[in-house]
Length: 336
Image (cartoon, rainbow, N blue to C red; front, top):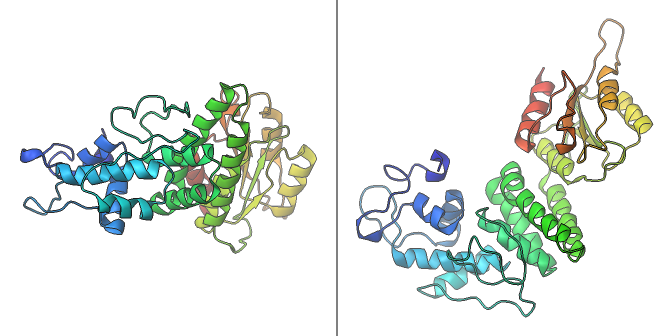
């Protein structure tokens, strides 16, 4: 795939060497995880290749690969990475991990990675291995395991990457399962969302100094209750030292206007999950608000966030496509 996935290993980052030794990029592709995850397991838990095959590049033997496959199978059950690594190092080859009695977390193999998992019905495809562990922990309503997995994903990948490539795909998979099962798994979706919200808040700094004219107001438009994407944005901005006033779900129009006038933000982010809640007049009205002394009046940059604005974009107002783009847009506006 891309050069990022290859990670600069060997001449092409993914071509097996003679004798069956593999580069880190090839190992990552076979396991369905990111190369950074393989390197983290090596550095943090001692799951690296048993020997060098010459030069400075590391090569993985079939025995090394077997340990990593066992690590993947164990973490997919929701087991904390440190404990999974200890068990993986105990044996020389992959060991089948018994599924829990509720049948929600069968072991993961390369052959069944693209198949529906027995008992869960979650079609996670080729997304990160962490997604599977988080999904299965949520299906089992295993709070300690879920919190550890979320915390580890954010610590290892950073909040923006963890949200984009791990947390959001898992939330979407669980949401699809709920929609297709007649609300059978609604408790799982609520359980996962609550723990994700907690993980996002814990990842952000406890205190961010206020900076006049450099703050951000984040709110869902009236009638909109999906707050997690805004919580992720708030946490990412807080980590960059940008003060945020978070107002959450379904903020009434009058309250939004008061909040903007009172705080004088550089940026206002309006989230709409559905087209039925996205409102062009509201976005235009907020963008036209002014404050400050005569001759130095200021207006906020209004970001229209979320899929609800698709096809309903407001001319002149940015519509970032994802978390990374939203963070960049806020940083750019604050720096002006």
